[in-house]
Every structure is written in structure tokens, then in C-alpha cells.
Image (cartoon, rainbow, N blue to C red; front, top):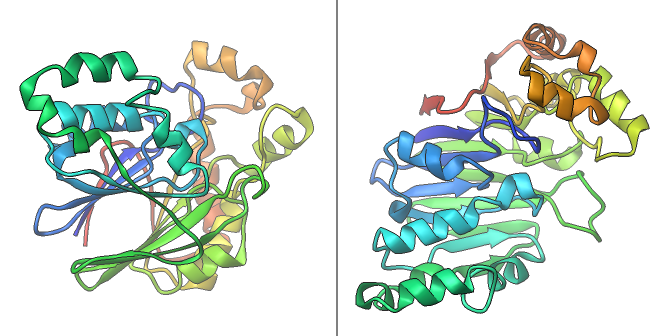
Length: 297
């Protein structure tokens, strides 16, 4: 099993990180994609992975930084002659999202133009996703993988369900948090996994700033709490990801971020603090994710 970090950033436009996306590749070449934020499709090509070979996409929740590259992914697969419908797992609302993209949706003109060509008429299923809205428990299984999921605590469930996931394949187990505040469900999903990929969107001071600012959710996991989760779950390797731009020194991003975080605290030194705070509770193998990082299991 090979895991490629296609996107390790969060919701703002970041010159150094694409938005959320993790690609799991089995030894038979089949890909399973978890989240599809902006930039992930380009990074898929950079990682020498063909979108046509992605069997399944799991959208952990419907925030834009986890889904907005999905139309590009699907249309690209159509153009690359994909012959099967991509399986799309996600929360309540995923069917609505997909129904409003292609035929009769936002990309209707593109659909009409391309489907006028014979080759594209032959593989319309590539832009007719097989959507399956999931509930806690077993989300999907085939001959190669088993995927379980549970609700995590990011935004109120009546607004949008948010899921963490656990995947078993080829004798290995991984878990991915999506976006969440610390919660028991994620500890259970991550129990004894070979690798836990968990959001670490903001250090504590940034979470406190957002809690007072009323510009976005602050329901994320701090580095200190992430260390506690990894220790309690007994994970063998922890990969912190979904960094909320707090390490950037890019002047345009810092200007944009003024309402979102304490800009005077931003900078690469924050990553040292992230490591320090995770290490307060977790002494296992630790990696800080970057785009196109590859992990082999």
C-alpha cells in the first residue's frame, strides 16, 4: 500500500499547499481518494497517478476545501476515457452536490459540448457518479478494502455531517480524521492503526483567536490534543496534516489571513511548536505532512 498526500492545506489559498486530499494506492494499482480539495487533481498527475484508476472517492464533509476539485477530477477522468462511474461516498448532501455539477448543472455547457463527440458519448458514466451517502459503520467493502466511518465533531450535524474514516487493506490499517475537534469517535477509528492521518489545523493560540473572531469554525484539533488522541489510540505512526497556513510568510496570504488568525504569530517556527506540543503526549513515529509526501506500508 502506498499513500500520497495530494493536499495538506486548509481553506485559504496557499501557494505552498493544495487543499485536503489523500490518495491510497494498492499493489494492484487501484486508487482510493479521500477528499478532493483544490489542487489535488494536479498533484495526482504530479504523483504519476491517473484519475481513471481512482475507484472510489470519500468526501469526509462538504466544506469547499474538501470537495471543490471533484468536478475537475471527474471531467478529467471523462476526457481520459474512464469507462466506469466513480463511486462517491460522503455525508448527507453528497447526492445533491453531484446532481448539480454535470448534466443540467453548473458544468452543463461543458457536458453538452463534450458529449457531442462520439468518444465522450460512449463513457457518459464517467460524469454520472455512483453516489452513496454513508452512515456510521461500514461504508464500503470490496475484495480488496474495507472502509468504516463515524461522525466526528467539526460543525453542527444538522448543517453538515462530518466523517472520520478507517480503511483496512493488504494487511494494513489507516485512519483519516477529516476535520474535527477532539472526539471519542476518532480515537475508536484510529485504534491500533499503522498510520493515523489527522488534521492539525491550528496551534492553540490560533484556535483561541478564531473562537473570538466569528469568521469561521474553531472546531479543530490542537497539536497537544492530537498527541493525546494518538497516544490513547495506540497508533504506530502519526501524520499531522491539514495545516491552516499558520506557517506561511507569504505576504499576500498574510494580508488575506488577518481576520482569520493572529498574523503576527505566523511563520515556519510554528511547526517547531507543533512538534513540541504533540510530543507532550505522543512518543511514536511522527511526520508533518507536505504535498506529495509518500508513505509506503
